[in-house]
Image (cartoon, rainbow, N blue to C red; front, side, top):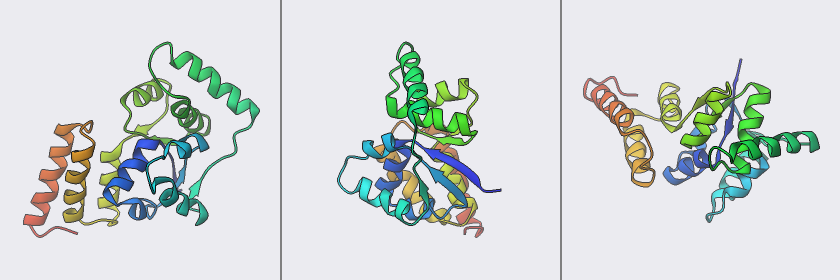
Length: 178
């Protein structure tokens, strides 16, 4: 069964920034997001690069009806009492929850709120792990891209990042590299 994931804005931005959108969309996943997230892709080229995958049928953007919008609005009203989640954040949290999909995000507050609501959540390090395990990128590329990502996204958990870098470097040294 194909894994279905729902992407938050920061995952698309991180993938765009390190040049791994093509490899990401090559994973054996069905990728979804919401129109709210697409509107947040505002830097030059981001929305256009991501939209290519919608045109290819690799990115699914649901049409959310009035009932969905009301429920997202309710989630947002509750969420702003406790954190600064945006309506876009609530849209992917809602969509992942009602469909029992996996949410991909690097936003700590969205992760915490979604996990607390029973949603399975993973971040960029998980995406890198899957890219390496699937053979989508080599260990060498993973090391280069992860270091590049850390230059622009210092919110990544440094200890977990370092663990992966050491593991992949050791595999290269042992000749076990992809």
